[in-house]
Length: 344
Figure 1 (cartoon, rainbow, N blue to C red):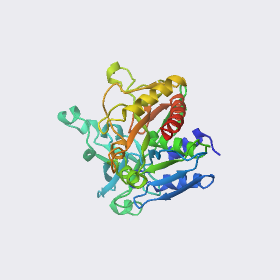
Figure 2 (figure 1 turned 90 degrees about the vertical axis):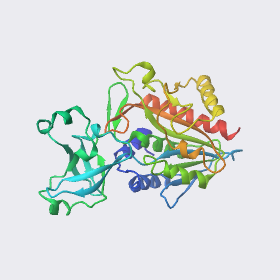
Figure 3 (figure 1 turned 60 degrees about the vertical axis):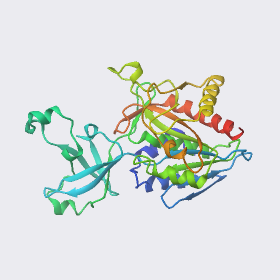
Figure 4 (figure 1 turned 45 degrees about the vertical axis):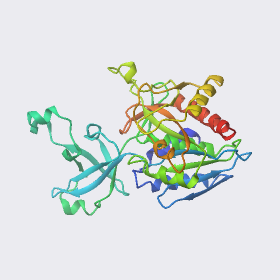
């Protein structure tokens, strides 16, 4: 079996914007096919629901979830000069897109995101941040007819970003949000767990938590643990209270964000487990963001839910940055949390 870093790299380098997660799902299915004790099915929306056999049957039905999709763009038109107009798929700041390399469509046609040259901007334009309507994708086509030989309206556009290990145990890549969570779930699938549990790989998180809504309704668990990446603003010029979370401080366990107020008992249990097992643990310093827990915890009659997240710099950009030691701490905490809530 591949080790965790290899799985993470493989997953990050796959393209899979919201609604177009096929390559990610195929990789995950291929991995699961080589394991014992796992049965899986895909629902009509594209979620992958995995039944993981443990040593014992759980008193409670526990679902552990991560989303397969990444932020990206979609081609909306082709101009006469052969350049492409795009709209964002998920929450991307246009400022991080300008000047970046991208790939377009299943053929992964190379392109660059361009914008008006600075010397052609008005004084007012220079004072304001660009919008996606100001950007275009240059694929090197001479004109519209040539461009349409290679791409289609509706093709997905993904950042073209290398997976790099650098510094003191840091990893840089696109799509760490949430291919890290997918890699963690695959590591659980390959382990001998104490209790049965259900692993869900969801779709369309970045455009409104859509896959999690249907997956949670299907599974109908008693407890859910969402594995995610969250903002780490531990950079210069950002005060401590605005940093949200920080690299090298371990798992981020939230009490509240913009989409959820998390189960208080599960939150306290995670803190106690971290203390007993000497696991690095932190919480957010501000109430911000959201994840699939926002849809899961209000499914059916209500599901007790907790999110465990990786602190990540430059989220929703081509250059997400995490620290490998944090990922290791999250894996430890998640496995112990599963064991604990299965027996509550």
